[in-house]
Image (cartoon, rainbow, N blue to C red; front, side, top):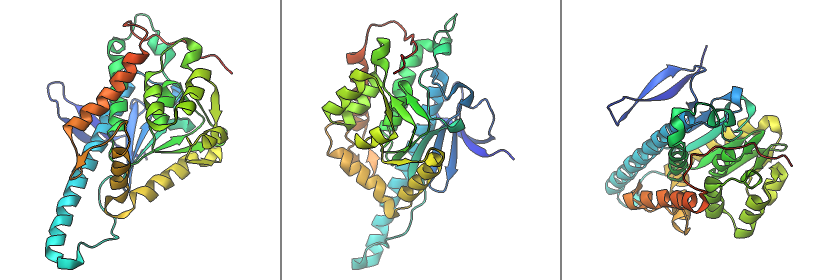
Length: 317
């Protein structure tokens, strides 16, 4: 029996997305599966190694934005409930140690035992060009901005490989579970191409020396190397990556009273990049603008001109 998933439908003249239950089909480019308090968002093009296209990235952004909205609403309800419990409980305060409802973590992964092979070169270089090529750069940024705004911990299941554009989505993870023989490659330098989203995430999360090693050499980084560079949270056997990533996401999501979400907010608020300003568990509009500006700046600084992106194959090590 096929598994049921969340599918986001956007009506042509209606800006509000409607959430529907649909059966899994081969036509869904990204699917969402809820398990407990974990929202699993899965790239679903296994026949193309989960390669990225404009429509896939639009669906990815839709799903993540939906998760974000649910998490923010749940946090606001939790704060309101806690305040009410405090007022009625006197000096004892609200009850603690109880798991809260709602999304507690987001797990980003790929179908078919691989994370993401990067941009789909066949589709990007098709003749005639696909209609979505004109807006592909916007679609990429929108998906990354949604991930950067995610208020709950983002866990990444990195199976087999994450290449170039795929590497950028892997680097968006707060916690990254990597297969022992899996690899990540920011190889745009070998193609003579820009790497704006990789630069944005690397610069926000890692020391300068680490960033330069990764982007200037363009080498494949295996699981143990990623662990040494503090990119990988855990390195496990290749056939255990998805299982362990789901366990880790469930563990983090189960902490009581939105603890993981609150601590992520506090940590990011102390960082100069991708900082999160939160008031009563609601991300402010000003902060949302700052997050978007960070990725726009990376795109501008990395730009090689205004022509649509036409990627080429990366050179092997």
